[in-house]
Length: 493
Image (cartoon, rainbow, N blue to C red; front, side, top):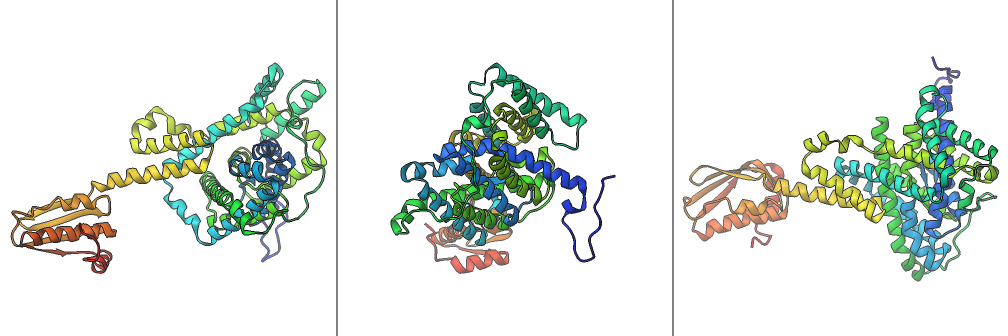
C-alpha cells in the first residue's frame, strides 16, 4: 500500500503529487531523466539553427517551465526542437540571432491568435492512419537523429551503448521505484569516468551556460522591413510548432486515457514562445521523444514533471555543468533507442494487420512516413497524409450516389451528393424516353454544396430541353434550404 501524505483541509484539494509519496517520487525522477535527455538534443538543435549551444539550452529551460504552467496537456514536454530549428536556420544564417528572436516573438503571438480562433478543432480532421504514420515516422526520425552521436564512437562507445541497452531492458524487471534510464546514465557515467574510458561525452558537443538567462528585446529595427523579413519564418514556426504540439498532445491523451485542452495548449505554446524569445531563445514546441520518456518510460502524469524537467535542466547545466559534460553520449543514445522502439506502432506493420487493413489506410500511413523522412518535418507529413486521406475519401464517397427508377419517370436518389459525386448524378436519368412529368425523390439523399445544386439545375434543364417537367421532392430541411437559396443562381453548365 503506497504511503500517502496527510489529507488536506476541507475545500483545499491538493494536486495528486502532493497526496502520494509514490506519485511525487515518480514525477521528480521523471523530470530528472527528461532533463538529462534534453541536454544533447538542445545542443544539437542549436547547431542546426546556427546559434550558440547556450541558446538552445536556455530555450529548453524556458519552454519547459513556462508550458508547465500555461500548457493544456499535463506531462507533455516542450523544449527547443529540430523542426523549429530547421525553419529558422536560414534566417539566423542570413540576418543573425536578433532577427531569429524577433521571429520567435511574432510566432508566439500568431500561435495565441490561432488558438483563440479555434485552430485546435481542426485536429478532428486528422485520420487515425495519419496519426499512426506520424508516430512511426517520429520513431524512425528519432532513431536516425541519434546516429551522428555514434560517429567515431569506437569500440568503447559501442560498448557503452550495448551495456546501456542491456541495463534499460534488465533493470525494470528488478527495480520499479527508480527509472531505468536514470540508473543507466548514472552507472555508465561513473564507470567511464572512474575507468578513464575514452568516449564522446555531452561536453564534446558544445559549451554549457554558466549564468542565468536575462530578459530583453531583440536588437533589431522595429520597422516594416523587419516585419517583412521575419514574417514568413514566424508563420512557419507557428504552424509547425502547433502541429507538433497538438499531435503530441493527442498521442499522450491516448497513452494516458485522458483528455486535454487543445485550445489551451495552442495559447500555452504561444505564451511559452514569447517568454522564450524575451530570454533570447530560439523557440521550440512539444518534443515527442522526451515526452515519451516522461510519460511512457518514466510513468509521469502531472505538470510537476514538466516543470521539474525545465528546472533540473537549468540546475544541471548551470550548477553541475562539469558533471553533465562527462555523461557519455552513447548512454543517452541508448535511452533514445529505447524510446524509438516503444513509440513505433509495431502492430501497424504486422503482415496480418496490413492484410486486413484497406489499402487506402495503409497508403496514407506510408505516405505520411515517407514525407516526414524526406523533408525532416513532421508537420509536412501530417498535412500530406491528411490531404491524401481526404482525396481517397472523396473518391470512395463519390461512387456512393445511386439513382433508382421505381417506375417510368419516378426516381429515388440515395447517398451523399457533393462536388465529387454530383457529376455521376446527371448521367443516371433517361431524359429521352421518360414521360412528360418526372418525379425525383431525395428522401434518402443529402445535398452538401453548390456543385450539387448546379447538377440538379442541369438535370431539370435537360428535362426541360426535352419538353418535360422534373419535380424534386422529399428534400430534408438542410438540403431544401440550400436548394431554395442557390437553385437557378449557379452555373448549371
